[in-house]
Length: 298
Ligand SMILES: [Zn+2]
Ligand SMILES: [Zn+2]
Image 1: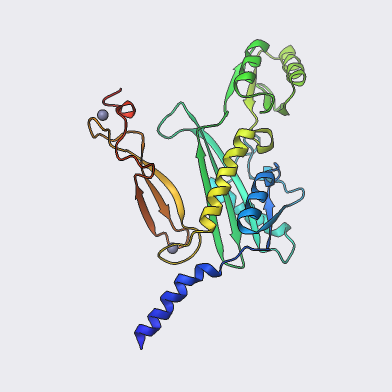
Image 2: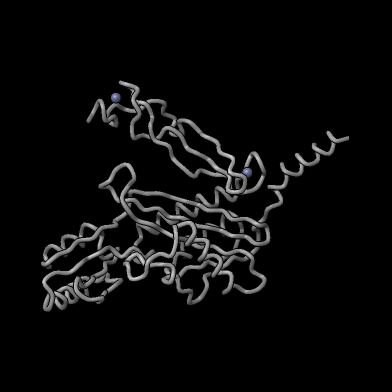
């Protein structure tokens, strides 16, 4: 008798994942930097989920990259706060909210290489789901300089992909800030205007998504990862959201077998029950080229 009972439970867990649906439902996107332009079409194509941006949603309260407002919490926690606030702007029949949050900094193992970490979260109150997609990329123009000369600033602008990627000019001595600069004349005028009264100024890449196509591409990758997870039930509990959360480096060197900076394994984790699976050699390689070995090729 009890065997049948367990059997029914197992069948239910196995097939529960097929009951999840986003088809023909509507979500709100809590964004103000036009991220919906990459997020919405992907969700609609893969899941049949329609999403609309919240009009006049102010995400600056959750921190700005240019530093005027500090981010209130960790990247993941801030993302959750954005989603929660998004719901308060959503029509009463909408139970899904999507938000995105990026972080820039130094690469954990390659200290002089900048890294862009993008996360996209979907919360579905009806199906009691919270799933996060993530993408990390060293392809970012994240950079800043302090300069006294137009020539140097012009050269920096070329390096970071100006004018398709915008710049920010900041005074070193006052809160004065100019954002979203994406025309050469405009840049030149601002630089000369500030340098008239101040010895030097700070130039930063504008990391807001609509001013930064390179970042927009990483947000797209994070959305694709979110969609993968929304289509992937956990082998343990059946809840959606099983997916790659971590990359483990340390593929052994083909010459000396010491760990290198190449990928050894992908770690998959369930957002619900935290079941973890290690997928060894995801790139198909079981040994690394000695050029990546700090012992053989220091
Ligand atoms: Zn080696
Ligand atoms: Zn699970």
